[in-house]
Image (cartoon, rainbow, N blue to C red):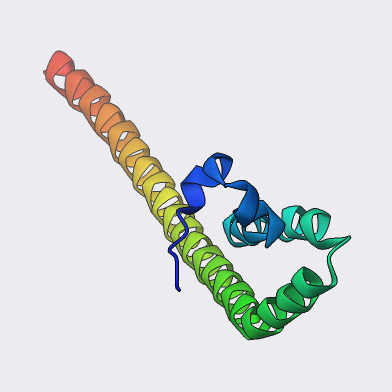
Length: 122
């Protein structure tokens, strides 16, 4: 006979379920972290073997996830560096334009004073 186990209802385990360790297996499959799993399996040889198998099966995926995370971080860093460079260039261009406008303004002031003197002399 095959029974289904509701992993969210382990508190409803019967004495028979507990006798066969089904409640432990339910906790085993519900574990969220390796630390939680290690604590659960420390006194159960069968669960230790199962955990070892799961770890080995997931090890490659864990490495892939770490590689993807590192690549994503490097890509974000390159994007940030590129954006910083663009902003620095924009700032430099803005400063150059400001200086150019200041020089034009000063030239206009000088020209205005010159014109005022010329028309006041006449």
